[in-house]
Picture 1 (cartoon, rainbow, N blue to C red):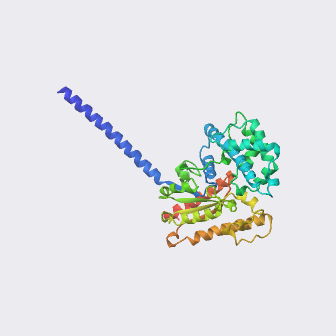
Picture 2 (tube, rainbow, N blue to C red):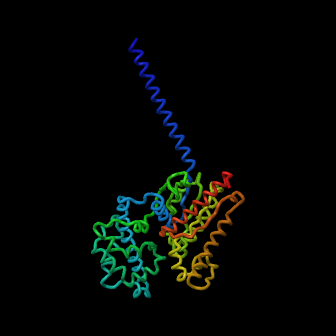
Picture 3 (tube, rainbow, N blue to C red):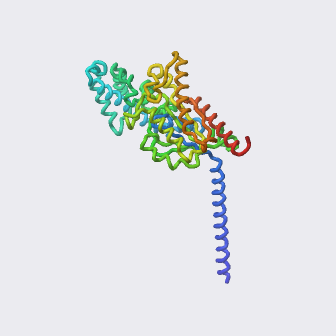
Length: 384
C-alpha cells in the first residue's frame, strides 16, 4: 500500500513538473510572438552590383557590434581574390582590345610585362588563389602601371571591372603583409556576390525597444538567377529599400553583357512596385554610388543610356552634377507614380542620395528612414 502511494506521489510530482515546463514554453512562445509583432521587416532589393551588400555591412558596423577579428580574417581570401580577378579582367580585356589594328599599339602590353600578365591571368582564373606575397605584389603593380592596362582601365565600364579596383591597388603592400588582418574599410570595399538570404536585426537608436523601432533587414542576391528567392520574403514587409546604382548608366550586366544596368534597374524597380503584396508597403529608394556618379557624369554623358536619351547637360562642375542627379531622381519619381494606383495611395515613398561606403551618410540616411517609418506607425495607430 505504501509502495502504491509512493508511486502515485512521484507520478503527481512528474505531472506537475511537466505542466510547469509546458506553461513556461507557452509563456516564452507568447513573449516571442509579441516581440515579433514589434519588429519591422525591411527588404533590401536591387539589381546585382547596386551596393546592397555594402549597405548591409554598414548596418552591422553602425548598429551592431561590427566585425570581430575572426570575421575580419575571413575576408582576407575574398580581398586577395578581388585583386587577382581585377588584374585578370584588365589583362584579358587589353589582350582582346589589342587584336584590332588600331588597338595593337594602344592596348598591347610592353614586352617585359607580357609574360607576367599571362602568369597573373592564369592565377586569376583559378578557384583557389595564393596568398599575396611581396613578389606577387611587385608583379601586379608592374601590370597595373603598364600604359596599356591603364588605357584598358579607362574602358572599365565595358569589362566588368569592380569598383574596388583603385582602392585595393593603392593598398597592395599592406594587403600582402604576413600578419595582414582586413580593416573595416577593406571589408566594405570587398566584393562578394550575395547568394541566398542573409538577415540582421538592429535599431538605429539602440537595442532597447523603448528607445526606438527594431528592424529586421533581409538582403538577397541581386543577379537574375537569385531573384526567384525573393518571392517568399514579400509577405509582411514594412518597407522595401530599393538600391539603384546611378553611376552604372553606361555599364552592362555581369550576367548579360548586352543589357544596360540602368535599364535592368528601371524594369526591376517597376516589377517590384507592381507586386500586390506591396500595396501598403513603404518604399525607400536609395540612389546609390553618388560618389562614382559625380566623377563620371562630366566625362560620360547621361544620354548614353536609353532611358536618359532626352537629357540635355547644362553648365559644368557641381552644377552639372546636381542637374544630372535631379534628372535621374525625377525619372525614378515619374516611374514610381506611373505605377501607383488607388490601392497604393497610402504608401510612403522617399528618395535618398546615398554612397554606401560613406558611413556617416549611411547612418544619417537610416535615421531618416527610421523617423519616416516611426511617423507612419504612429499615424496608422491614430496617434498622429
